[in-house]
Length: 285
Image (cartoon, rainbow, N blue to C red; front, side, top):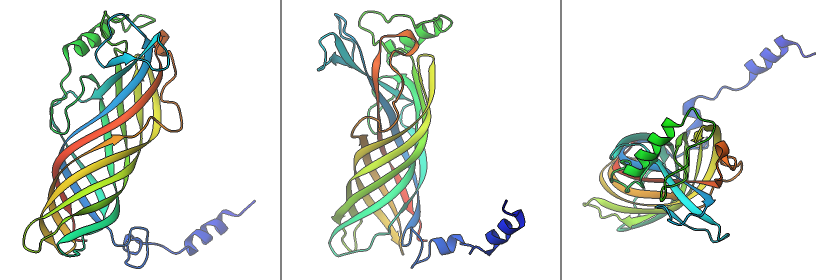
């Protein structure tokens, strides 16, 4: 058996790394990157698609399945019941380095993300309303009334089969992109971003009364336009508008099991969409 005193002695002998050393110019993984802060009006929502038996009157956001004539593919939206929710997050980014009138450079960044909300109509991006439609409210009410039963109440004709769902997930958004635009010396800069990202999120997902903790990895594509108002050393103050959308369904573990709570719904897939407009501050440190 290894002596505990020996382990403590070995740990004490390890070199200590301070935050300053981790971000040192010639060392550390984030050498040359600055810390930033974003405050924005954001529309972040999850899209859940699923298969259900086809009905004579197709519900809104449902269409005939390409795989089976007896099934339909439906899409439901999970978002806060608010209009243009305020949001803030931290990020790191490589500072701007002027190249002349025209600017072109690849870059990388990551930031915190969150998705939280229940069933509603499709939100408008980035500044539109996320209020719930009348059918969604009616569905929620009918579901609540049957919450003590062993199975969910059947939806009305023309109503989506998924009548109760909720998501609360948090994670990190990793983005690699091309940044390009015009950078005149005495006027505000105009920069565009086009790139691909990976959203790594985890949290709880509830479908009817079945609740699961899920971790998903979502590849995404995004675009943004920014107007840089002020530059101080390696820092900057800018306003921006942009949108990011999932490229495919979840990778890895299954989103949720088929036929939840005794229903005939199956093949659930998750999409994550974010649109935002706001102010970004990149600190000159």
